[in-house]
Structure formats: structure tokens, C-alpha cells
Image (cartoon, rainbow, N blue to C red; front, side):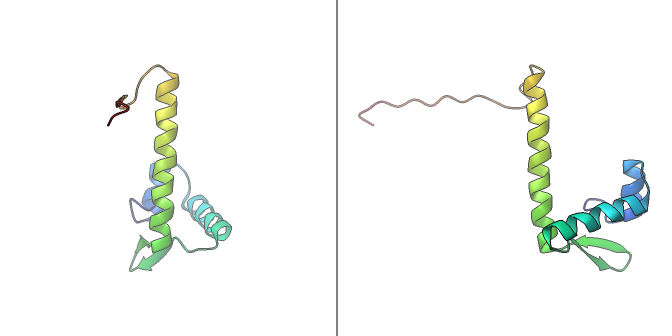
Length: 89
């Protein structure tokens, strides 16, 4: 919903019903005690709290994908950097 701006489009993308998506959003909003979306015409737009939650969600899902990649032997875009220094520095 945050990326598409519409419940119906998000539900289609997720292969579920609009009411199921709406119920999940409502549950999350009740759990955190903040509204995540405001209505602008027919679109749903993220509130400031919604932007914060989305940033955390993106990080969480990104870390999950990184973990799966590492477990499957891929670096998933992770580059190892080793830094050294001498005591006189």
C-alpha cells in the first residue's frame, strides 16, 4: 500500500483481498498506536510515522534477504572490507 498508494492494487499484488490488507494495516496501527496512512482523494499516503515504519520494514526485509543469501553461500552484494593500522598512527 505504501508503494502503490491503493488498497486494491496492493491486494492484487499480494494475491489477497482488500479487506485482508486493510485489517492487517489496522492491526499494525493499533499495535504501534499511530496512524500510518492518510487519505488524499482516492490515494493512501504515508504519514510521518508511516515513513518511519516503512524505513524499518525495508531494513528488516533487506537483512532477511541478506541472511538467506549468506546462508546459501552467496554474498548478496556484501563486500568484505578489512582495515588495518599501525600503532604509531
